[in-house]
Image 1: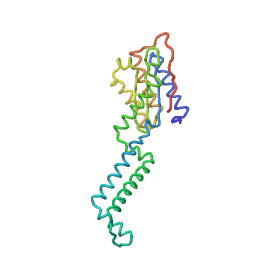
Image 2: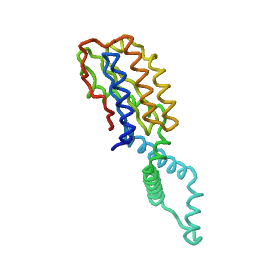
Image 3: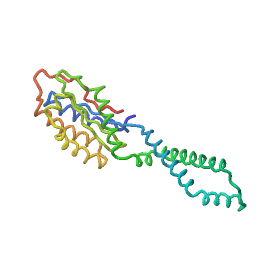
Image 4: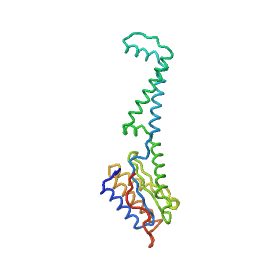
Length: 224
């Protein structure tokens, strides 16, 4: 799926090309719709809702059984233990599937995902993609990836070990800030371009481009 049109993708590609003119570092840009399906989180919320409903029913059974009797015409019914247990299980299953189904609406599903979980999943996805597509893929091991996950509203910068040794993670904070400032305004391509320029400037200080430098990783934006 393409998240940016051709013109916006070209802005990102041009920024990478320009940044690499002054450094031997290789910048890879990746744009993802989301970093995880979060099915386990949806299941957890459904289970919590089911357990809560069953617990409330177990604490005040007379109240709920009275409501059920009223719905049945007001005739009192002698509920057996087996019927009460079956009703409790049915209530739990109904609640479980109801909460699971409403989370199929993606805005609600992502609203219910805790922030730290989103951050951890985005970081894990960024590391995974970097290991597959950029880590140790250059002659001097100077690859670096800028990863943006749209649904989670989070970004990551992951670098090869030689870069990480020379450049503390805190240094990339400015690049992240410049990038997210634009992205929060809806300017995704411009935001990524701003981050690329900042990353390129840092790389140029520590890994200046040599006369025999060749382009080893693609400049184009990768969308996953």
